[in-house]
Image (cartoon, rainbow, N blue to C red; front, side, top):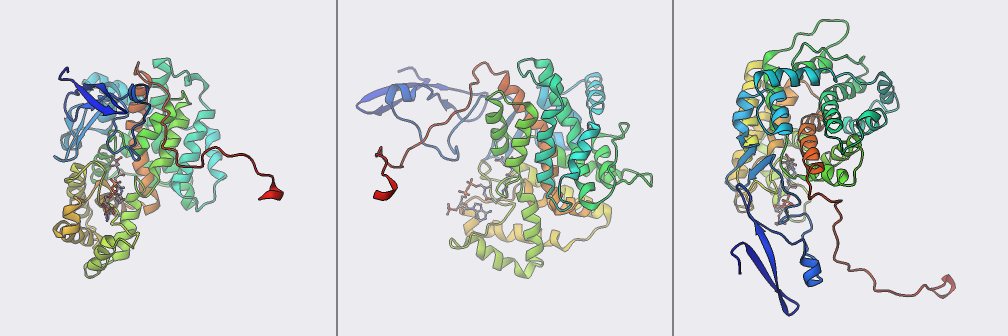
Length: 428
Ligand code: SDX
């Protein structure tokens, strides 16, 4: 047997399946012919042991707490890169030269405005609509506005759609916030950085000049970079699956936003801050730790645990350091940051969390920073979606240009009724 094969004894025969190696990380057993060879499916709800695709964008080692984007460690990118540089890296595979970076920033900044008619879409929402509901609706609506970039087989049109999405997400998110507080929308100002432009559209008003605070700008830059991409997470897999049918790129990203909204995924940052506020003070931490460990209590420590990281989430480490820096530099003292640090210390010494390998994830500390900057908790996941759009479009482009890609169509283990005949209502 070739050493790069796996065999399966099933149904009285031995099936051989090729084993493929990546650059780094687990090998994969190629089971594409398994059903044809054995008449059986694999069973993996939640895809805990399934590689759904081949990708060169992001690598995660959950045991070592490693996260690489095109080979570059996340802590180095968070320290040295601009968000536009990371966006270029994820999309194109290499860090840009100074000239490439300047051209990319210019291109993105020329797509930051929304079609003026889209502003009227916001009027259809209740003022108290959740920003993620608005993001789903408005990003989906973009699919009705750009007929010049829907031929997804044309790399140029895919890139125009990608640039539009990256450029417009800050504008859309800022407008969702303005709409919720009844303030006028702010137009982009393209001589600002990507993050500075977003801060001005969010917190600026037409009646006054807005000075971008460099401390806040740097914090947002890091937060966006930390959220940019994360391998085949639920929302990225949603974008890939939607895109595999050839669907409109804007509609695919709207599907990713919908998936990210869930509290088990991107919605955890909002849930984590609400949980910290509910705990309120360190003395109440044991009560909540007890609830998290209670099988009969659905409560979970939001911002803790991860499908892949069974060690620390490297993003959480950077996020915690950023939170300390921002609160100090802004002169903000927030008791929930003390609660968060105390909760982390207690949980990491508790046998339940140690044996289940539950550590703080990217969502545990992000809310402390965002709250200190002035964002309402309802905007936290919208900011996650804003940043993750870069990863979604990079993964979408990779999937569309993959010669092996086919429409995603999983099968099932059927446990319903065997065939039976119709029974007329008067005989039931
Ligand atoms: C993100 O995939 C990604 O990469 C996602 C993300 C990205 O960048 O895209 O990293 C972003 O979504 C981070 C995760 C944010 N979610 C939360 O913080 C919500 C709280 N965490 C959990 O719901 C949970 O940890 C998940 C959803 C994140 C992971 O769930 P898994 O891998 O399916 O694991 P599980 O739910 O089966 O939990 C394993 C065990 C269970 O106990 P047993 O059934 O084995 O006895 O650990 C327990 C769980 O009850 N557990 C927790 C817990 N998380 C898991 N117990 C208490 N508190 C928690 N937070």
